[in-house]
Image (cartoon, rainbow, N blue to C red):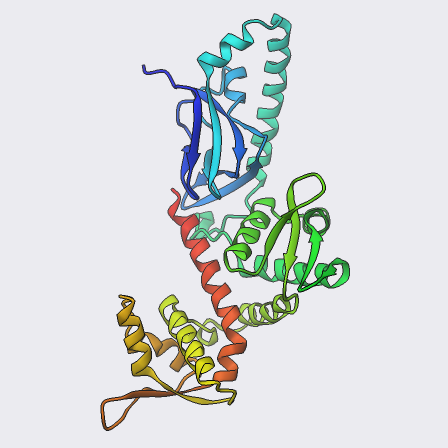
Length: 346
């Protein structure tokens, strides 16, 4: 059997370090980034924890003879760098320690393993179940999760944030207190939501006095409230009435808004030259057609596309509604993409 080699390794977001039931042959020290630990279960997952810089993964298998295989899957959440140390190399270091030290570690490992087994049996908040207890379609972010997160962010920023020039900031620990200690919210989902907000340009992280990226900077606190109203409304209405905007339609709406901004339009409703927008997509080699505006038309955000005498396509767009709903639409599709990416990790 080829022995694992020690060394520094880098992982892209979503890349797997190891899968559950893989042979355990090394441990990992996280140099930078974040690692998500989870257990595949049916068509879903049970999330265990998120580990960060300075923490160790996979060391229990060395001390616990019963853990010759990985008990969970580990995947990078963001770009992550780790030091992999093979058990063979680690054994050389351990060989110089007193025998009683390993005995103590083995006892602690056995106790921790039993505790983890109990936690895994209870931690099913990320699972959904179908009829007769069968595992249903996995959903990482449920609508109730998003409502809870947005309402907490909004209230905490309103009550505790400090105004600094063009942004508001709080320490991450303040949010953690409310989400973890008060609401018992999942740390995994909190971290994923923060990454989502950063990717969408709604949140920036800055180093605190301990040189940790825990100062959370937000430019528009009221954006949380606007999205909260949207998601809470979507959560309680019938599926047939929920707003459904594809990612291509989202791009179409963004192009329409950009077009109207260039025109200096401030009207509540405005006629848009759809032909010009389609030409812009074509120039960028984006496969978006006039049919991709259909979701917006069905939702009443835009009128049917009209054909003029010179085959010029136009549509009457509800400009003020589109501007108001667009951030929530963008967030809705970002959440959908996160859920789809989690489902794909099998």
